[in-house]
Length: 293
Image: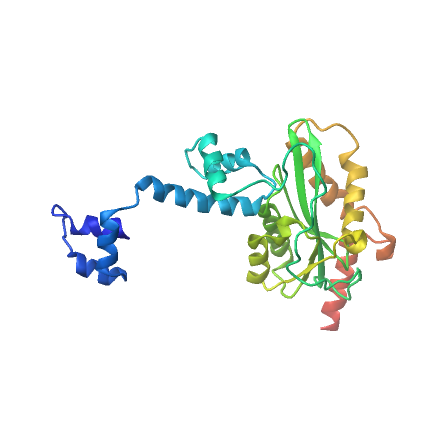
């Protein structure tokens, strides 16, 4: 605000505003302005403070990404900035990848941001009561491809998903948004996940609150807490990911989408669903609900 006051009070200004008036309107004292005027903050300092704020936000989306990844993200947002400068700003701000060095140790699970509302009970009386969510990855000739998917506990249908080359909080939010659009934005759905940084992120937690959903997180070291979701990824692994060597991300992306929509949802009969496909099961459930109404 101080540079704005100086600009409005300058002799050559089109509409000159006295310092006292400008300070009163903008909500600070003229003494504070004059103190700043004696030792003003440079434009570069202001710019770097802004860049550090943006870097912290991007780091929150992908805690594993280093300064090179953050530099790429800044370029995607339209910032013209060198990797060297990003490295310097990260060092000043203390922003560091959660993966340090080449020897990767098992990463400590983060603190939960919600209770475990599922307690290994992977059953539901109706559709859109409980959704499970997780992220899987697979190598291609162009690098890794990540997929975040939401599964309805009642019908085993994959109600929404998103696929990208980066495992960021935005991937989980896009998958959630896709699921909500497909299902007509139901409220009070339990969203059960592990303690991955993508699901603990502010962006994902804000999305849960915005859409009035109930977040749930499993315990540390309890591999069975999300076993029902992992069983789907195991099927995906056997039927798609490990079937051949994938040269491009787009090739693998199309294969994943085709298998989910054409085979898993419409052709793969499941014993838990009475030897019905997820689509057939949901059709029967919805018809029963409409008749009961």
